[in-house]
Length: 169
Image (cartoon, rainbow, N blue to C red; front, side, top):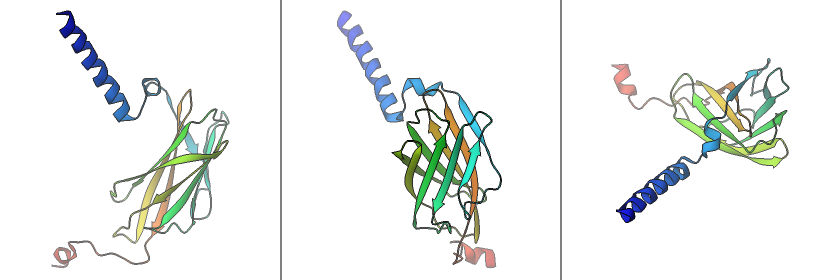
């Protein structure tokens, strides 16, 4: 009886540990509050960096290079944090606004204190003008700080939808 109880407790413990490992998060980060920074005007990533900030001096400045933001090409993304203590990581998630294009992710690596960079490739779209939303999540010991930055891309070659012949009938 004691052996089977010990085995059951061990299996349960391994299951919980495995789930935490697979989820890629620790129990201590699940309960952190989320702080959303407000987008500052003007903001056009095709012209330069955009900043989201709050009244407490916290900010995230985000840029994409090249600023023409070509599709299906490697882009260099950069984030600069101010007023955020001990940022352990920044996760970038990009999603289509006017058409679902899946989610594009980039984990930005620390280049120096408060400076993060990474690479991203945006998929080609059938629309000439695509609207995107970039969400940056900076994890600190006290909070998950988010900045949401909209931007647009323009396709130089219009790709016909796979079912174009149905639309023309």
